[in-house]
Amino acid sequence: GFGGRCAAALRGRLVGGVAAGLMEASAARSSEGVEPPPFLIEKHRKYVLALQSKTDAFEYVVTEFLRMSGVYWGLTTMHLLSAGDQMDTEKIAEWVVKCQHESGGFGGSVGHDAHLLYTLSAVQILALLDR
Image (cartoon, rainbow, N blue to C red):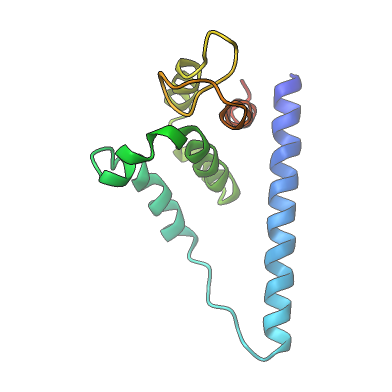
């Protein structure tokens, strides 16, 4: 459907833009005789996945108001690392819907007031999940 086409286009632009930026930075360093350090994809994947389980951490609790944006960036990161399938997409989609306010917008977390920034993140999440 339309959401799937939008998500595919978004993923294509994100991946293409990131890849181009990484190649450009790598070429610049190589021309200077400096080799960039290896990109440790698996460590990045593990880090992002670990964030969702640290719900009793101080940082998790005090950043509740911006959770929607964090979920968007985590999900996007995992897609860019070709690991989107490692995320619990059903649980994420259910949580996003719970954050919708009666006005139609979305809050930063469940029970928070709707805000344009978090509504954008929610729409982006739902597009990435083809919902």
